[in-house]
Image (cartoon, rainbow, N blue to C red; front, side):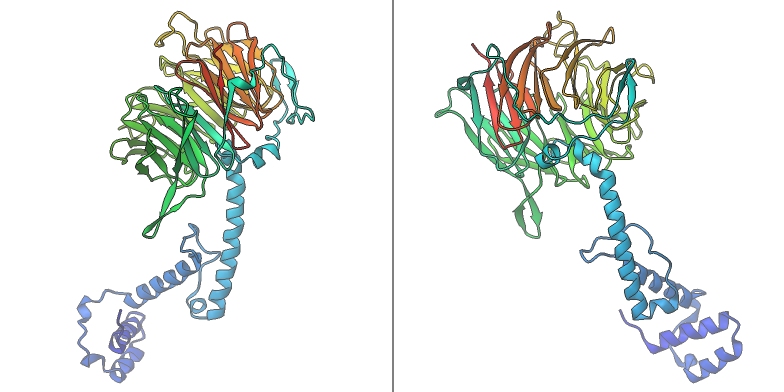
Length: 524
């Protein structure tokens, strides 16, 4: 950049002329020898000096708006600078200080607004769960009963398990290696490999095949981020993981905003980076060519699993997206803290359907096996069933007395390997209960009440005959779905975040807040 006195003088001369100061312009032109300069005045637009001053003023305002770490606050300064203010160092310094204070206040406000969304992620720390009760629910009338604000039951004594259903120690394998709480776990769909994701910023693949020597072995999948020319370990929690249908690839989402694809042998295949914040949910489609993710940045993204490129980003939520589920290989539903559910399709610029009806954050959504019905659960304590054929919900199921955290369809009925068994829906709540629902009739068939703390996870066995539930009371219960009776029970050493069945239906995996992963062998 270069500035000559001739150029400055010419702009001042033109400004005086354009402003009507003809005598001043004549005198200034003679004294500054404007006529002897090489500047072609026909090329200089009108109001050039004012334009340059305005741009300089904008630069000073922008400079005030830039933080020390280089990030830009996306709002205007407290008030516009005047030209004189901009050239007084003390004024600029005071504006920078005031603007910094405003930024701090707004960041604190934004953090408070997003706190509830963060709490929905499976990555909430055990401190946040064990030391703080879930939010109180305002009084509401559900099925004619008054339900005031409820607290978590803080039982001083651990639950006593019936000896008839207690899983013996020799049938429970405790896997240790994680250095922090383990939020999620998932069985490989074709072999006895169990993946787990933790707050220690690692995932692990545990080999529990009986032909493996010396019991279980583990592969450590350490997440790294690029800083400069080097890869450094990420210190962010693993929030979600999902195996592809072939069991050859494992996709994982993280609080660092990246999704990663690993092989079953523990090799990093791809890193997917387009989200601008933590990823809350991640799902493969059945075909295995696309991965779907949802994030705190209010967007969902379909990724090409082979190239690692984002095929399409869907910016339809007005608040963090919490869950996603595929209807088929190219159509999916998403929900978020904005109380909305969007059904989107690859290649479409707008949602093909939007469902509205919940009055609080929508925590989870699941399509039934046929893809005809969509279930959703919310902090408004309701469970709703939706159909693409209508805007209003098909069923509005109200029975829980606190937030419903998750839901699962049974692998039974049409379009499943168990077509002769009736389909049912299970819901798990912060009211410490699990409910089984007859969706056709819209009624609750069983209420499962053995847990003493919020229930965070439920999972049907592959044949649909049993349901596993995991609670922060450290217990894993196995229920008979036809009778609603408790058939197996195990008490671990930490609050249970996730439960899952292996493909054969003879083992249940569970991840816990104390860093342990337990495997329950249900074979007799």
